[in-house]
Figure 1 (tube, rainbow, N blue to C red):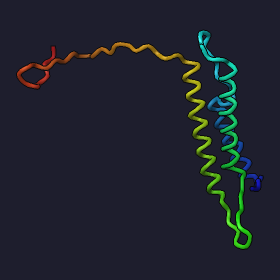
Figure 2 (figure 1 turned 90 degrees about the vertical axis):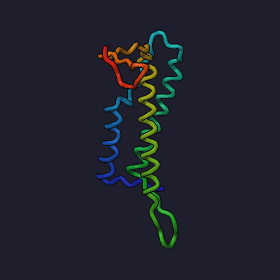
Figure 3 (figure 1 turned 120 degrees about the vertical axis):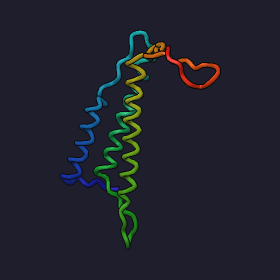
Figure 4 (figure 1 turned 120 degrees about the horizontal axis):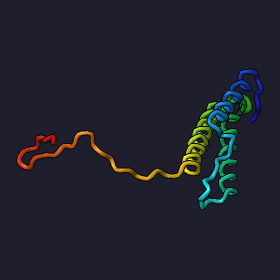
Length: 129
């Protein structure tokens, strides 16, 4: 495994990390005051999520891996796929942590119809009241 630090790949890595920063991935999620969760466990989960995204961005941007001795081939495509999967999983995980820890679940509210509709027993045509 080799690292290729060309200008294009470094700019790609910086761009991917900037997207994660825009998603507020580098900020740990805040716990609600009445939360039963430990802040230490939430911080550890956030750290692993951040580490997963940075690893995926590094795999997708600057890693090269040549295999073989005579006819060398590059398996960079595999690293790109693994990097995209890691970044996607980390983005979904950070989004889930933010929605679960910051915003408590909303109480279900009754839905009201704008125009109540009832069906007559004899036929299936709706009758508006």
